[in-house]
Image 1 (spheres, each protein chain N blue to C red):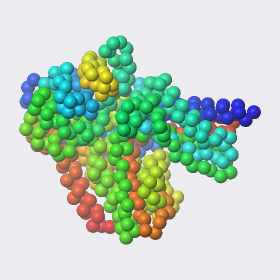
Image 2: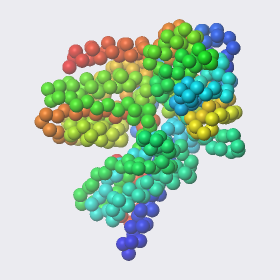
Image 3: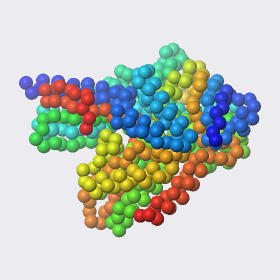
Image 4: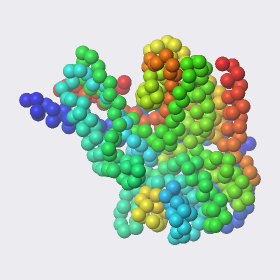
Length: 299
Length: 196
């Protein structure tokens, strides 16, 4: 009966979220491990090498001690791709994600960071009004659900920047703003990380896209060749700035630059920057309509 | 070139700080004090005397993840370090009023910390932000905690072993790696922009 299917699937989503949150915090993805290894091989500055060597030791210790990679359990951000035929409504998917986040926080236990934005009082186990945050995408002609959990640390989130460039600033204005932002951020967002850039759309949508950009697997490229070319160009330019690991100077300032874009108004040219630290935690699951969960699936 | 030092805190001899130069590697032994935004707001903005001796101390910018095991007794779960820049304004009074000698955090202090650190004989140590799994293994025990009502932004006393490696980000001689890196990067930006 449909009631039972709904209840069971919501519990499946809750279980998956609880697992994804802790998994993401403890076991960083292979593509990130590879990118950090490459960085370690590339870096020539003494403090930079010391930082990357320490990061390497830290990841190994998190594995062997089964501890969190970083103490900042972040704000729980999810990205959901919902097939139009998936038999659970997004309202119930959201409830499952929220309950799973809370359960993982209480059971592990994880540090709870959620506070009321005026009183600064804790609002619950990493949940609160409009927390966790979910990015939704709806997929035609599909019956599955993909869930990606990205616990987002505050050190890097505090290094977020928006500029409403004018059309006459062109791509040059976009490049200058991204470079100025990352140089200005210095060591604060825990470099080397992933620079997410959102261009086009509106002010709010550009920042939303910048967040989607940091959630992508490292080094993936935008489907639009013009945007992909800008990703390559900015990636190279950012690593010429010399900010280096933890801002102590060096060759590796960023692991990647990802850009998401949207078409925009003829008089708009918004550019948003969202930074993801080196501990770019990310874990994904695919949930089939019968409740089968595959935790290895990346998207 | 970079030198490696081992320093035990709290220190009694100011020479221990003066021998450190920006860029040097440091491994720390002894006792360190955990402190954060709200702890320092209480000391300096609300004028409450800290119930721990901070003279010669090493302060760590942290809000540790802990498990309570008994009244006033906590076990470590995951201890890492937060962004320092938010707390730079406390540097001068920590040195002049309480004799703090070292502040450790991640991401660095802006240039306003250079003068008081030079004048008062203090250093800023850069830790690797996010490397909490490693940091937790280097903290042997949480020996004391005060102001538990500020949890987790209490005043913590940790016993550490081989804490680091840290990098001297700002030394007591007026040098700051952050200042130098930023100055070079600003020059580089001009060069890059000229290419566009």
